[in-house]
Image 1 (cartoon, one colour):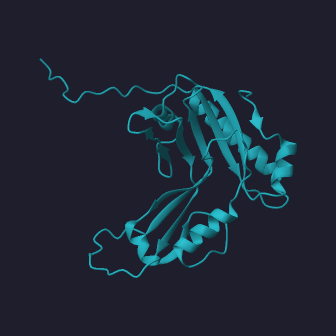
Image 2 (tube, one colour; image 1 turned 180 degrees about the vertical axis):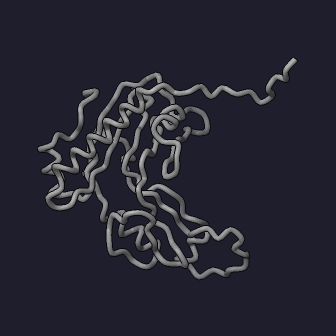
Image 3 (cartoon, one colour; image 1 turned 90 degrees about the vertical axis):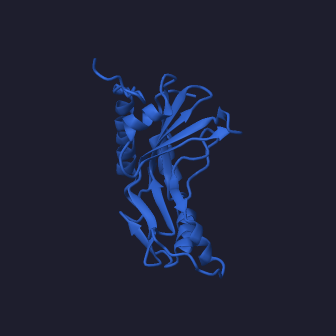
Length: 217
């Protein structure tokens, strides 16, 4: 494990780009004083971002916490048909949202690396309960008073992954270069890693609050 270096190297990236539509560029940093919420506030905190955490058996925290820093597009449905909000990474896609979801995940495969956590990018979001009606014939008796789509999946391209086992943070910038764009795409990914590194170095403003603030005397 080498802290601060970018993986893969440019020549390795060029070779991987011949076979894979998506290639993650990563940088591991030592950050044992950071918390998941603190990292989220430094790097994300706006729309198109997320924080994923879990606890094992409701007690101890799991090994990883995932902070989604950049999600440039959302796969959703409008009037029952597939729709991309933002630049679509793949086209064409099926008019059926669930089929489009399957097509997109198959098209955006990335190389497997033993040193990577289980989530390094891809589609993150929700499937509504009523999405099952696209698979089975079920009665529709409830009134749709919310008008929410059956699915909304953000395309996460940049992440910060906290590894609680060794106090490190893995920064991930996924690259989806077209033909002849690999060199430029690699430079852009490294620039995004640099921006996340600088963001982590910035101080976090205090957020201490009390449930019952003291009244002035």
